[in-house]
Length: 138
Image (cartoon, rainbow, N blue to C red; front, side, top):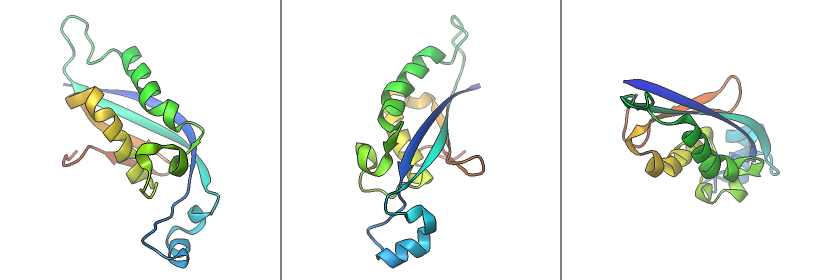
C-alpha cells in the first residue's frame, strides 16, 4: 500500500462569521478573524491518495493527471479569491479551515473515488487540519 501526496498552494481571503451569532458574539469568538473586510492566508493543501501501485505503470496515479485535476477543480476556484463570496461550494458555511477542507474533499470525492485518503490544509505554518472524509477515521 502506498500513500501518494500532491501539494497545492493558494492564496485566499475569508472572514470567520456565523449568522447564528450576534455581531458581538462573532467578535468575541473569532477575534481579529472576524474583520468585516476579511483577512488572507497563504494556504497549503496536501492531497493524499492511498492505493497499490499499478504493476504496469508503477504508479498509484499519474501525478501529472492529479496536478491537472487539482488545478481545474480547486486551484482555479479558490486562488486569489474571497472564500465566502467567490466559492459557490462554501456558501453558507463559516470558512474555518475545518469547513474549507471538508468542502474541498467534497469536490474531489467523485473524481478521485476511493483513492482519496487524506487532505491536510495548512492555514499557516503553525496551524493545519487533517480530514479523512465523512465517516472515516485515520
